[in-house]
Length: 94
Image (cartoon, rainbow, N blue to C red; front, side, top):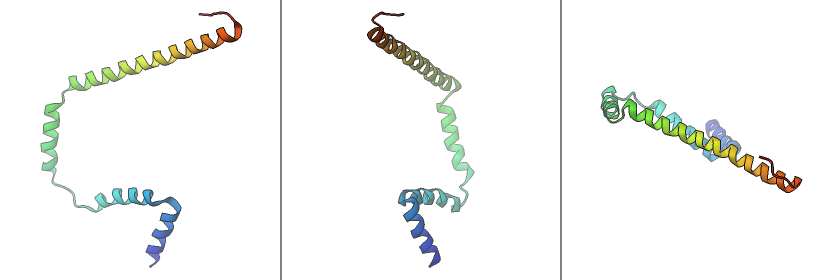
């Protein structure tokens, strides 16, 4: 009975979502260790489908997009500050 009371109090304090997440993460810990041969077939199919060149091209695309957004952000800031300065001071500064 004390365990049920603790669960009810915990649900009241932290909410049902926290309890649900905690129960999802604790259930696999109680399961038996799976057979390693099941992992080997998945790993072999993944390593056959993905190469180092694929990973490098994906990372290069992410870095390129990041640099683009970086320059876009600072360009937008510069243009907004120039526009606001032109409105307040009455002159354009580049």
